[in-house]
Image (cartoon, rainbow, N blue to C red; front, side, top):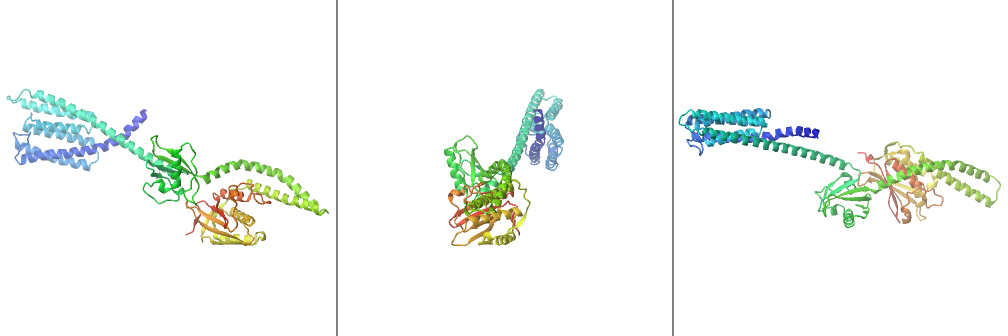
Length: 540
């Protein structure tokens, strides 16, 4: 606790300095106005309402001196931002001396000048430490007592003057010390409030940096449903909307606004996923109220379901991959023995029925061997060696590879939609295997008897400014019942398929920080999209 108090005292010291210079300047202006009024009153020959002097010439001379001192004090208060206590001490001391001299030339019992003395001492006392303020009050009281002593030397003087001066001295001490204590408390309060304000401002900036760098989207709504805060991730999730001043959520994202309305009606119900636009990512909202007041503000967290599902799937497949790899190793040896025995059996003189059975053994043995090879390839997959790949040049090389494989023909590759200089970050070998798997998959499932297979490649950037490559075919589309399981391992609609082709493609994408997804499929064809990491870009 003492450490905290020391910190507050240290932080308020500079704050007290800042909150003392301004009162010093105001008091310097007050001194200048008083000195100017006194000077003008006697220059024009007009006595003031409370001040009448028996020595007008001497009074005027002292008033001019006071005016000069006031001007110098005002200049110092603005030009010299140091030695505050010394400035206040000298100025208050001069106030006491000059006002005492004016009181002497007028009348020691004059109430007007005594009031000016009270203001001068109390004004100086609020700007310094308590001990120094008490010293000012003591000097002023002793000076007034000395003037009263000089007045009492006159035999006609009123003997009750000492009592009046004593009472005035007590009032001077009380007003000066009370003003000093109140001013010190005010300065400490102002300095502490300013320090707290700076801390809150720093905390707000820190919170802003944290919120802006969250991977989840964050939106803060006020009571009226206006968006008061939206981080960069949420801005990208919602399609990079134009920057508006506190837009309504209904205008910014109607599906999300409807989800919020349903949640307000049924807070216990799990919010449904939303999609800001047909090409935008699928988002899972989470709502939290900012206060217990009815209809209060709400903070909305948005999660990308694709990334969340990918993380869950990856966690599940890590252990599954180890298990399948060990099983594949155990299967490989007896499978090789079975296949080899089948080959030897096929070389014997067999009848047509037996030879058909041998062919079945050979064909399914090859299929099992392909499955084992794919599983082992997944388990042995090494870290990708990413490089900047020019897609236009890469697809030209891929065209030659496709043309050299008779089992894929006839097929036409259209790369007219690939921008020149469009580069992506990917492992070259992985990208070749990925695209060849997609082309082979299309050759198996997307052919139509009435026309040749045509594959179209297109490049672009999505709403999150990530580069992508689309691969579209002119096939019959994918049945709706198969779309949800399309990327599951070992799922296939072909009798001789392994069900690992598309799954392997997605794994290759995730290894290179990319995503593979189905954009749409219908009777006109199917479109897959490879979304690369943001390091890919168009060359200038």
